[in-house]
Image (tube, rainbow, N blue to C red; front, side, top):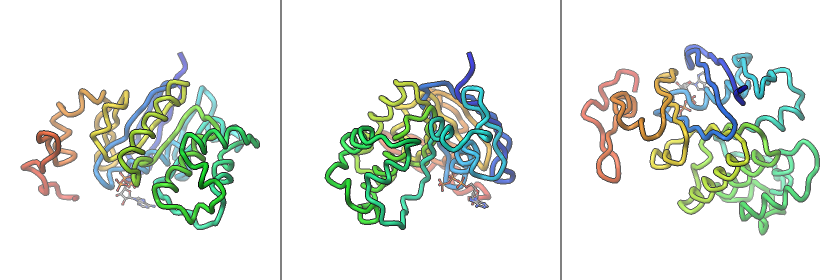
Length: 241
Ligand SMILES: Nc1ncnc2c1ncn2[C@@H]1O[C@H](COP(=O)(O)OP(=O)(O)OP(=O)(O)O)[C@@H](O)[C@H]1O
């Protein structure tokens, strides 16, 4: 079976050569401490960082796709929620589409509970509302692959859960999701976890396997402690942090 995504990326010194294979409908969490390379990996797969990516989606080279074809195949949601232009929310969502589709825009506005804000310029939304609108833009074309950089940050607890539920639905329809996140409490919602450390992918495991890895505590410098986390005894001994 042809994998949905196959990519070899490399951006030294920020990211060592990394080979990734993702199947349709897979949900993958990309984790790692600040500066470990999560954003770099997502941007490299998307081909945003120079010519670093050799990526194929369903066997087709991403680099040679037309802009429209790319929109149908891949959406990348950057971590930044900053939008400087006063574009109405419904138009922001429509920007994600390869051709006009008002019904799709209305569907996303309703699902993201943005219908009441649809005509408001996006630069006059709260940060969490803006995060939902930008996620709507990424979801709009029903791409085969979603690369999401911290889509849960700035969301309140209910919206974290609603967003994960929505992404589960999207994955059930066959879209693969590769998502950078910091909230390790949400890992059980994913099929696989890629753990990064200083620009290297050091684990590709199921969520259940992750916490048992000695490397986990070493990379994150924390250990599970009841319902939360505690700094591991070796924390702050690593030279680069
Ligand atoms: N444009 C850039 N040029 C050079 N180095 C960069 C650039 N952007 C990021 N870096 C460096 O690359 C490394 C990886 O950064 P990256 O943003 O991928 O980390 P991250 O895991 O997403 O971190 P965070 O959790 O803080 O968002 C860091 O050491 C960072 O300082």
